[in-house]
Length: 189
Image (cartoon, rainbow, N blue to C red):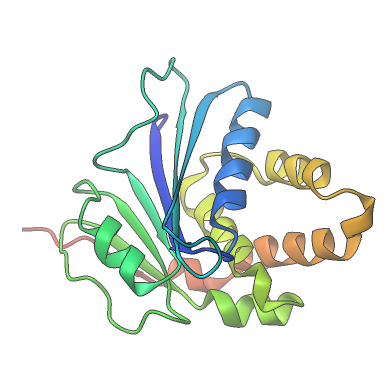
């Protein structure tokens, strides 16, 4: 699929905005068009945060998305809000480390990823957003790992070398994990 309208959502402080910026910037590196539109709740850290990223080979006329093709939900409220808006046939990635009950829809594909546990194995639970990014990359091929790595190296200067290493490990672990192969396939009516 050349067109991706992605909503990434969770609590403030979970790296939601950074994840969206990385996808959008990686798309530009690959010669694609992209937009990134942030949205914050009334509180910053701990409040709700989401962003919309559109990636397309064609020019993008609006950064607003009513029915995304993919949703990355880092918490239960985000899954409920944006999972309900996901277009039929869409992909829902859920951080199963914090979301115990999954939205019931038989017209989408839902992938549960224990992002916090994988991130902790990579070196820091704060890299859970990178785990979700790695799973997203593996499942959609929206942008390449190489483009994402280039963006991360640019964003995380040499003063954050340890964080860069953990983030790259987290992305690779999710991308190589059997977790992304464990899906709830769409029901065929």
